[in-house]
Image (cartoon, rainbow, N blue to C red; front, side, top):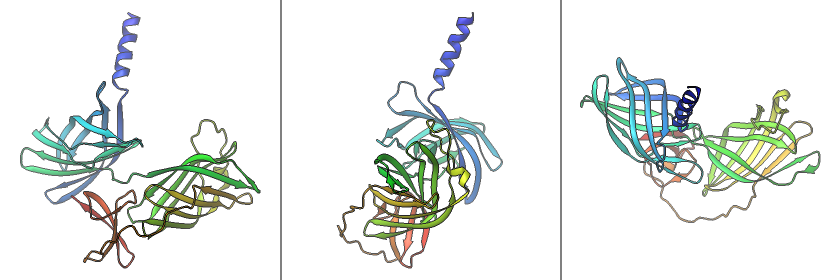
Length: 316
């Protein structure tokens, strides 16, 4: 009998291996009214499939209308080398507490790591149209290159390291160097927010002078992190960033100064093509990964005006 219960437990465990819960803001537009709530969506990879997923909106409701769990089955996903899963547009008919509904996972929906972005259209009872956006389409871009640290005149050997850059809603940037260490000494997570950026022919120049708190990393090989006990630490940043390359100089002003160099400053300069500034005063359009666009794409766009201001524009 014990073996039977052990077997059942193993089967249940195997069935749930591919399921992952995401909790984020769900923005609904219902007949012109905007509603926001924190919601949880479960994404479950179908066992034995070629990147096919079941996506469940748990306890979904809008206004005073509870619809219960909405499960969209058989959503195809294409996985990129960096782990980003892009979902194909999929429409499914489901039965909810109020009757039948049609749910569409729109193009542009995607998932990576602990982040999920879904752009959905729901038609309930054939007459109630709901636009639902879960999370935001702001996925940090990962740059991997050699990182060299100089401390007390001693330079470390170059080590492959990943730095994440995220475009904020206001057009500024967040730069994250996680699990930073010098030799065997763990420093921690170095995160700079609200970093100013200036586009120079496809290369964005970044700069910042900030005082930050270095947080504890999660590298299991490090037992003690130095950064959290230091309190406020002045940090300066000078960097250049293109679509596929990042060069950064980071100075951490503690213990005589720790100088960090990431990548190489060998960007190709010059103008590959000329574009005309749009008549509406838009100087440049970017997606939330910082890529420059020729025109607005579906989803959230960052528009930098000719006067230097930036606005966030949602194109449906």
